[in-house]
Image 1 (cartoon, rainbow, N blue to C red):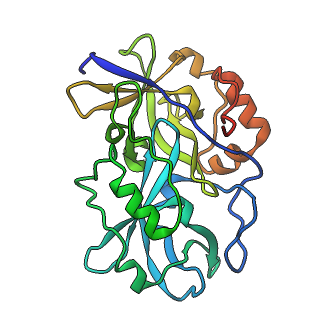
Image 2 (spheres, rainbow, N blue to C red):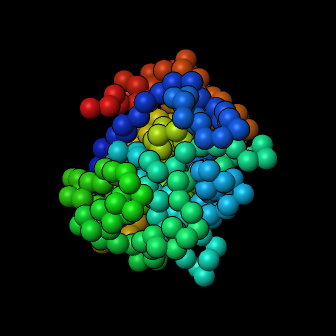
Length: 276
């Protein structure tokens, strides 16, 4: 492993509250937070906001700012000629269809045929505002993209796909040879698109731990497209961390008491940082 690294203290902007997937018969415009694993967000179908019989596509991936912990875009496969588009997360509403989780857009199929496309193998230059402005203008929202980058890392080095973030190794911050586990999933507040926790498989007797995103540092090899996360914890200390059943991660992540317990254990003031 290349030891020459750039280090970024990762933070989140998030608003917490009651959580869990709750759906109305139509778009839910209430303020209830809904927390779900990133693996379950992938594949969510997208429908027209007014006509739930008009399928617009499905979520193929998420583009997340590793610095702020904010989901910037849902990458939607429209199912039409391989057409892939990036939809600002703020443009989605949450609804239901046949008792299944779905996302809603105030756009039709004909509208999306005119939407800016995205090449997932060759992402746009996020250091410039051209792409974000064109997408925001099309969907009528405003997405906060840090075009300048942070701590020597460019915008494109900080905006990563969810499935990549959900597959990073985790190491002790002081001893990079001490591997603590690997990220198995991400816990995201779907209501506002904010990343709250990473589910880490510690490899210790099958123990899984929810780690606040604020507790991580993201590290990148200078000359390689290689990332990992570090924690200010040792493997022995992680043995005492509150464990979680993988079938219960969303409900555990939604519990305010558990959020504070995890924040205390990992030495962060809270799993969230107040909006500024």
